[in-house]
Length: 204
Length: 204
DNA sequence: CGTATGCTCAAACGATCGTTTGATTCCCAC
DNA sequence: GTGGGAATCAAACGATCGTTTGAGCATACG
Image 1 (cartoon, each protein chain N blue to C red):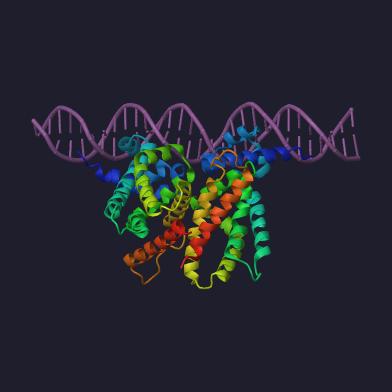
Image 2: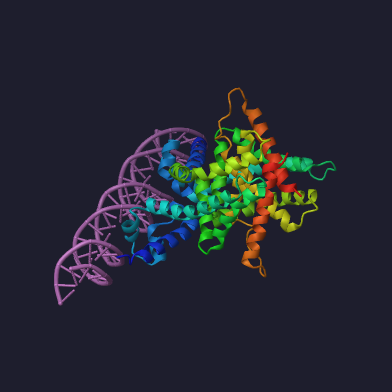
């Protein structure tokens, strides 16, 4: 009945790779299905269209990514001793954990590309499905940075997310030095990004 | 002899708009030449190919942008009282001046897109033609931030350029409100970006 | 065993892409 | 005024795109 589970999975995996490398329009279904070793028509059969496949690639990754982000945020939010670093950790760590996964690292590249493309349809899809995540983080930033005006806060968050998106799309491409484990390298990168973001958000 | 000056210019102007809106592959020569009100074959006649047109769009803008950047840098470099803010001003101001120009602002979008696309051919072109600019600024940053290791400096510059590229590509907060003159808004934006970049580069 | 259902496959569809061609128009030097 | 190179034009080229089709295959159920 469902012998196509592996077919769908192979398509999704190949799509993530090719979308990251060549973009959504640049990656053709013929390249994609060849890489996945499935028939050309399998994409339209299982997903309906190429656009639906794009949405599915996003949905699958963003559901878990933002789920982990909200879970981590809810563990630190509201508590008296919560610091800016705690909130930033809840935002950054799940994204880099995704990069630890084999093909997951490519998804951050896909995300950065989609961000830069200003595609209206995709922006609306992301806003509708995941806008509440950014809103919750923004609310927590506002609580921890009461001295900033609303406009000033938005400015800084905009700049910080730009830097983080850029950096995280490159993570995984950076080759680790010998002798450093993947976990250690990730931890080091997280600390780096948190320090930078803290400075960018809370400077006088 | 050169009645095609306006034709070439119209193509370049239309290319900047459409490349920013739909990307290099997404913008077709038929859309482009229709928008420029020139014949379809004019692009291949005047530029040789679509790829050459892309290069020309980059070359034309980056020549003046980086020329202004280097000129501004040479005015502050080496002097005893030079601050980090001076160097950042030399880097940021020419880019925002470009944004002030009508179609010039779209080029920053084109640049951000190209940045996110990780296109090898384009990266090599940029590195060959404009790599020395970034190298000169990096040297000056190193001189003003001697306490940072080489690796740490590269990290921070990477993050800052990511944030600036993101911001200047016109994502969010950079839009001007009513009642504020264009020049005043630009000055305010420059001050904003410089403060953020300074914090990101020089935090302890 | 027969059949219904989910899936895969090769082939073709129309559309659109970048590029080329060959004729035509323009414009200035002579 | 006339010749000739530069520029523009409509039309067509082959390639590639996303999608659709209909036949063939597999497997589970009566």
